Image (cartoon, rainbow, N blue to C red; front, side, top):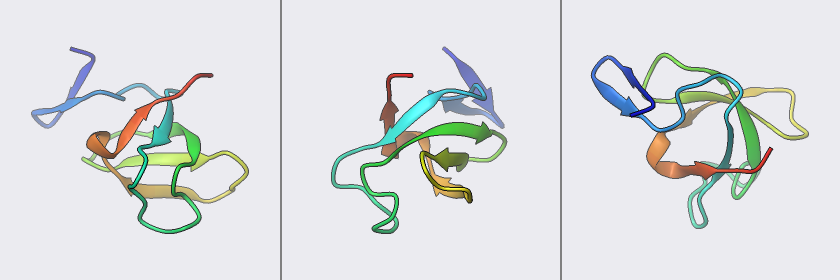
Length: 70
């Protein structure tokens, strides 16, 4: 297991993990299918800075993401 946060298993628990929003999932059109870097870990939602965006997005959880290449 890679990590736990308050008893929740984390697939992407390390700062710097590269993630991609899974196909068909998107909280908004700007981030649908986008790739980014985990910048905050501490709640069920991860803090992700998507490539080409300055804002930190905090609404995706592990189940909505897949590992991306660096």
